[in-house]
Figure 1: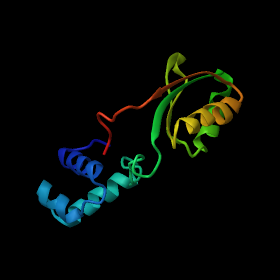
Figure 2: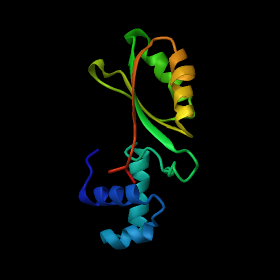
Figure 3: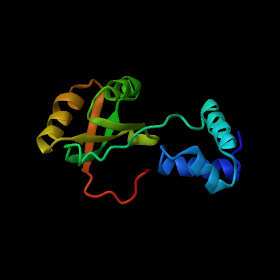
Length: 145
């Protein structure tokens, strides 16, 4: 499906604030509220909009340490490892990467002890996990919100 400029505007507005009202979007893009409802429904039905979600500020919810973890995997076990890490509460995002990169995880934990426990006890116990590289996030520069 090709997105026209109105669809692009709707998507951009919803990415910034998923709770934005259809009437507010309609006013901004110069269309009726009914038209906006139909377009959003079509974008959802066609899988362009996958879901509406809430993004939490992990620092305000008590979790203080965020890190990006690169995991080299044995190729034959990469899918099994991915399925396993999807179930960990500490893992906020997980991606398969091309080449030798393996998996990339964004994790959030309460403190450095929690990060160590996650890396050693959980991730370290998964069969097929090889080298692990961890980078602690110091500051958000740009996020999708």
